[in-house]
Figure 1 (cartoon, rainbow, N blue to C red):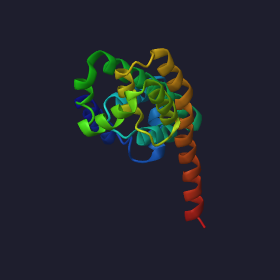
Figure 2: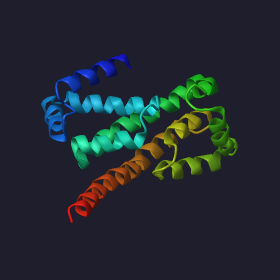
Figure 3: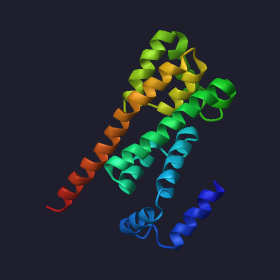
Length: 182
């Protein structure tokens, strides 16, 4: 966190946040480092929910364009989801309660009483753009869900959600620009 604060202050001072063109120029000048840092940010936002996922997903599209932004979002979110599953599986309920409230935990654990129903609920929720994916990945780690099933749901379901966010942003921005330039 301290490093993020210092880097943000540094970027502000050198004018990276002056306008979108400055930000794009800076990102393009970083070569492979820019995308790798963004992917790391996506991993961190999944594991430590400081930044809302929709915001960081939108940032990926704005910074890198719809296709590269989609790819970098996807890689980071999948890695973060896998980490959440394994953290929950290894550290259990006490770990999860450091991230979510007991009320939220109990709400989603109620779905896990029947593994087959939870697996179906999980798969549908991962595809739904508004579901609390990060929490569900943690809960899945506490169930008897096989990692292979979890991985396939994330690998095949996450692109749908990310595409919805990405396309909503792209088309929404074009629609707003068109609306204001009438």
